Structures are given as C-alpha cells and as structure tokens.
Length: 142
Image (tube, rainbow, N blue to C red):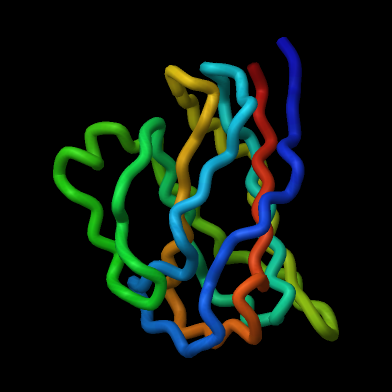
C-alpha cells in the first residue's frame, strides 16, 4: 500500500457572485494517478476567503456539468461514470484566504486512464475576487 498527495491544481472560476447550486469552476482534471485507489483526503484553498460550502463532483470520464455561474446539470449518462461527491463544509478562515480539509473520506475510485475529472459546485453564494481563487489537492491510498 502506498500514499500519494496530488500537487495543488489551479481551478478556473469567474469574479462574479454565484448562486447556490452553481458550477463554481470549470471542469478540470487530475492526471498521472494510479488507475485505482481510495481518496482519503481533499484540500481546497480559497484565496479570496469566501469560505462557501462546496461540493466536489468526481468522475472517471470527461463530462459536461455546466458553465461557470450556471446550475450544475450533468446528463443521466454522465452520472453512470461518477466516482462520487466530496462535501467541503468546514473552513478555516485566515486574514486573506481560507482552507477546507476533509480527512478520512474513504472514497474508492477506478479510472481507466489515470485521470479523474472534477467540478466544484457551490452550496453558498460566494463572490470570487478573481478567476484563480481556488486550488484543489487529493490524498490517495493505492
């Protein structure tokens, strides 16, 4: 058994107010992963200190979940490739930024090409200060 923590991945957003249920970021991918493993942790950095409850939708294949600042709406077919959701709702806020770390997730995954696809969905109403406020990292056991 081995562990791996992905480098932080910069996610793309918009500098505008978001509504609950909106796509907070574009779809992104984390590559060079083991083809199977267990996601044990997830870290999200919010450089704009919005600290809004957020979900990470994970899939083993590319999908269309929605545009930034539009409701998340994957197709029925896309849901068949879903790995799972990670809820990020315990934030540690600092003067200029905040971080949310979820441990002991225990979410098994399989991906045929060593890549997981993801999108952030907000459950609050954040207003990102820039298009590069969010960074994500996963901790994996394989």
